[in-house]
Image (cartoon, rainbow, N blue to C red; front, top):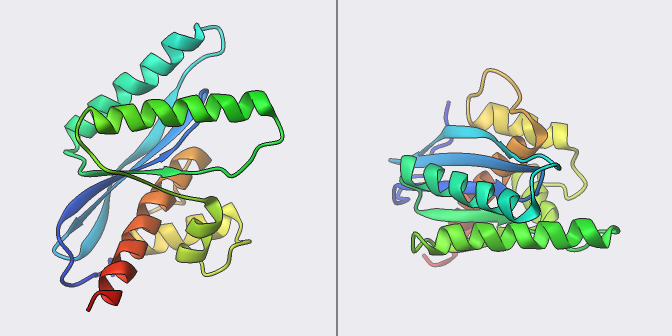
Length: 173
């Protein structure tokens, strides 16, 4: 049975797992309290493409997805730290491009850490990717575990946001 969040407004949420080589995308629709996956996949860029062109590819593909699915809100996975400074900078640039794509459509942007996502979905901050994927498969009525990992993370971030906004609204009652 699909997850049913009664009294919630209809919305389309895009979750994004930022990365320069692979950016995960997960789009969920909440309609009449039922959450359904609309799309999940990745935007890939190659290392032999100039850096600025890679960012442009991500931006343009995000804009296409935002328009195609009438996205109303964007949620980005936030990383606290990275041991590799170069990787952390590239993720930061990609997050900037994601924010620019959302802002150019006047969409709000929220972010959650992997720990927050795992706590919201599984109830344990040290949950494995497979545990998160199993919960997503069950709750979103998927035939298989969502793949690849970047797309699954993006679906997880979007689902986390729907769970967190449900709690926020519940606390307002």
